[in-house]
Length: 475
Image (cartoon, rainbow, N blue to C red; front, side, top):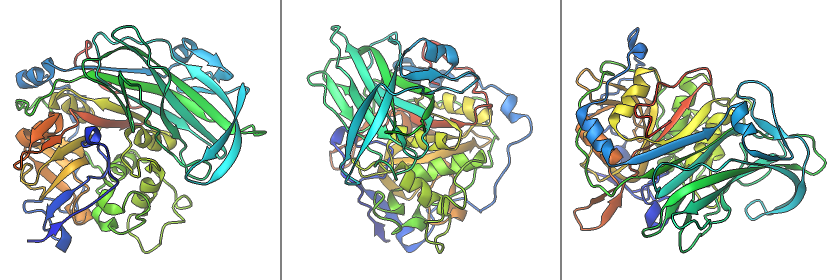
C-alpha cells in the first residue's frame, strides 16, 4: 500500500473544512495510479432518463429531521427592481433581465498597490450598496458571492457590514478583490477582523463566541483604469447566512424521488494534473474545486476557449482544468478553493453561480431531479467513505445523480484518471460527512465539516426548482 500526501497552503483551524485543496490527503493506491478499491467509473457518460427532471421529490422524514435544527437564509439582489432598491453611487441599472449594473461615472479614484503583481495602478470607482437584509434568526456565518464580468482593466470588491445582536455594526469588511483574469490585479481575499464580534476567514464571516448576525448589507465597488471607459458588469450580489448547530452526525434520509437520475456531466480528474503549475495552489493534487467547477460549467456548454487556454502546456490533458485553477486562485489564501471566487469564475462564462448551504440530501435531490448537478464541500478520514480510498480535510465533488436505491452517483475529481472519476458512494456515508460540522478522529483530534456547503451553477434560463422550505431559503 502506498500513501500519497498532499500539502497545500496552510489555513487557520476554523477554516479547516473549506472546500479548497485539502491540507492533507491520505490516499491508498492513487499514488501508484490505481483506482480506489470499489471505483465504478468506466469512462462512459450516462444520460438522464426522459422526464426525470420534471419530478419534484418529496422531502423525507429523516431529511426533515436533519434540517430541523439548522437555519439558512440565502438572499440575492439580481433583478432590476432588486438593484433599484439599493443605493447607487456612480453606477447605473441596466435595462433588461439579468443585465445588472455597471459604471455610469466614477465618483472617486484609488491608487491600488498590488502586493502580488508588484504594480501600482490608478482606478476610478463607483459603488452599489444593498438595502439592509435581516434573516429571521441570529446567524453565526455569512458567505457572500457575486456574478459579474470584468473586461480588461476592470475589477470589483465586495464588502459586508453586519449588524450584531446588540445593534453594533462591524463596519465594512472586505470579502475579496476579484477579477475574472489575473492580468490587472492578483485576485485576493483580505480576511479582516471585526473583534470582538468575529471576523472574515478568507470567504466566510464567522461570529465569535455567543455573538450572532441579525442583519447585514453588501456593497460592491466597481473599478476601472483611470481614463478608461471599460466597466465591470455585475448581475448578482448574494449571500447565505446560517446557524447550523455543532453536530458530528446526521440521520440518513430516505430516497426522495431522484432515484435513477444520472446527468451526463463531463468527468475530469484533478490527479492527472499533479505537478502542473504548482504556483497555483500546489498543482493538481489541490485542484478539487476548480476541477469540480469546470465539470459543471462544461456540462452546461460553457468554459474557456482554445485562445483562452493558449498559455497551457500543449502536452497537458484537459487544459481547461489548468485554466480553471489559475483563474480561481486566491493569492493571499494561496489556493483555488475560495468559494465566491469559484462562483465568479463560472459567471465569467455567463452562468449563474451561487454558493449555498443546503440542509439535507433532499435539497440535492430536488436540484438533481431538475437536471442540475451540485458540487458538495466535504471532509472525512480515510475509511469513512467506502470506495474513495483517501481522506481529506476539505474537498469538492460533483453529485451527478442517484442510484435506484438512493445512493449518490458522484464525479469525484480525486481519482487516478478521467475514466475512474465516476463513483457510487453510500447515501448514509456521504450525506453524513457533508452535513456534519465536526468529527473526532481516532487520534483524538477534531476534524471540521462544511455543514452542507455547495455550489449551484446553471444557465440563466434554467429555472431552479422551488425552495423546499420557504422559511429557510437555500437558493
